[in-house]
Length: 596
Image 1: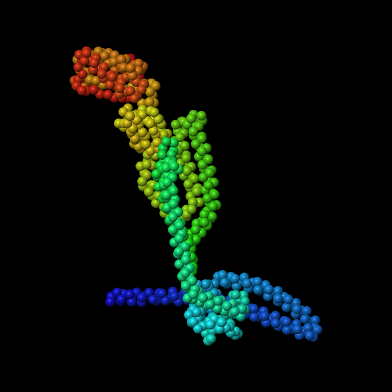
Image 2: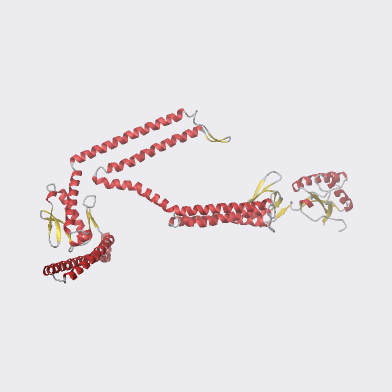
């Protein structure tokens, strides 16, 4: 009960709002049709006035001619001018009528499927829409009346209209205003409408007769039988094709190879061919069904609209696609021209930077190793510029869906690529800082190895144990980098530390330590090795042996040999090393010279 009460209140409050809207729409339609009627009445009144003026002049000319008066020449001149004005008015009238028919809403009289004629203006208190609906209802009632004889339809003319009548029923009335829009007399328009009504009712009765119905049913059965035979034929062709493929699989169907790599085996190729045949089979069946259904629907008059709609489901998208492609051709040509120009621009830029990289073209302050990284940046900017240029010419670039996808991709890229972008920027900074090159032996943090790759995102090292270490460029930029290869021609210095008690003379320790490097093949003679006292601890002295080497990758091996010789020499000399206090450190220091 409460629900009904609430519904009543909603209707009560909404009704005063809906009623003015409906009334406003009706008033708008009434005012438009009233304006059309006034316009047509003005045109008709002008035609009547012209006819009366012409008749008056002709009558006066006839009277003056019988009296042999010289005034008749002036009246003939007036009549000629009136005829010229009438001819101009007819041309203007045609243009005006065409404009009225184009800009005025018309209502079709279509009692069955096809439109017989259109109604543009009102008649009395009946709007054009009501007139069309009433005429349709009367024609349908006459069609359903088995005793109604279409040959008994007549036309009755009066001063106001020409009426198409069957017995006492007025089917429709044609006024002078209706005839004006057809650019004919009302009698001619009435005769045309009568013929169309008679033909429409006769044709509809013939189409719905029992004989026609049986013929159409037989035609549908024939169409279905032909469709069944075509399906059997397609299935037989499919089986024959599959059997032929399987029979000739070992002879004609070979493997697809690229050099020694088998891209597609004969078995896979056979399976692909069989699948293609199945797809073609179903595609042909669906296409035949799509063609058959409109044919079947077009057999019965009441389903002919279904056939048109079904055909439209295929033809309209195809038409839109063809028109879209045709309209896109100028933009596509623009895109092709832009891509062509930018492609060869990038090739020219690549050539310039490759010449710099090879050392053939020199630019002051621009090192050859800057060439390819800089080319990568320039190429990226040119590609971005190309995308900006062609973006407005892409299909659907201005659509809301395309804009939404672009924003979505931009958000994903900005949220998910922050670390990647930081690595790229760090890679660019490292490139122009030149802290190392490919082939240099470096230490980044606690990782030491030879640089084997420098990419925009990471730097890869190969250790002495043939391990590959991948380090993000942001970590390289934020930490310290030690390069052993920059001054390797001057010698790389590394240190070996030992601790000896105070009871041993430092002169003897120096001599024994300096006698070891000449016996190591990996150690350089120049610069000469030297020994430093690093620290005086509580119970021992810390000595540091500094040795130079050319190959940074052999430092660990040279250290191992020096440790072996220290153990052998000091044990043979009876010198005790205090505990396990053995320290090593690698660093580059200027060459030590005695006396400095």
